[in-house]
Image (cartoon, rainbow, N blue to C red; front, side, top):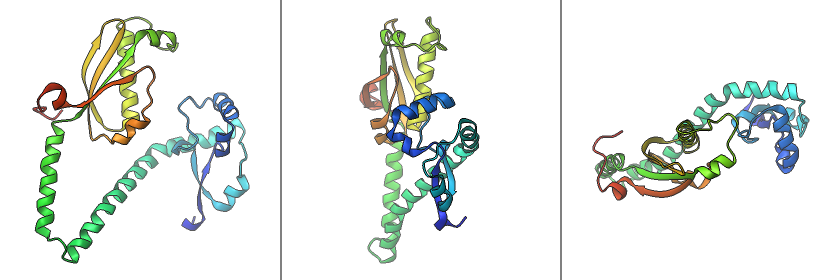
Length: 232
């Protein structure tokens, strides 16, 4: 396929986003799960623009839709990695291209750039020993009101399950390196502190967690008064 002919097609129609009730029924009927997103690699496919026009807003029957979704799902993680790498390369190039131009036209010297880079590295080393620490908390009363059927129903197993599910969601949504720092359980509440490295702060604005809420957000030195002695 020529690049000029390429379009992204939605297996489950994007137009259904305007009909939430109908979309929810379809997702449930097709067994796609609560985390299914119409605009995701799991629902996108490569399409010739003419074929995409012919398909338009056709809704596939269940067996055909699941067939295409299974194909997309098998490739989704690999494609996501390629996308992330390409986006990272683009961000880096946007920064480096002007620097290269400044060096080539003599505005800054190579030595000035090296000195600047060394300063950044020194600051980064400090950042490795001073991660962001976020405290998450929940009330067990809220949990018991909406406890899934497949969840444990008695301590300490339910506490372990809740913390495990939190860790999975943080890894999935924040996509950064994190370490459980503290955990406190008193039967009525649970609070945990996670140390996070290389976090894109904008992702905190879109963070969605069941039961858990952010109670505190500080640098490690602000809470414990010292840097981490060894990188974890």
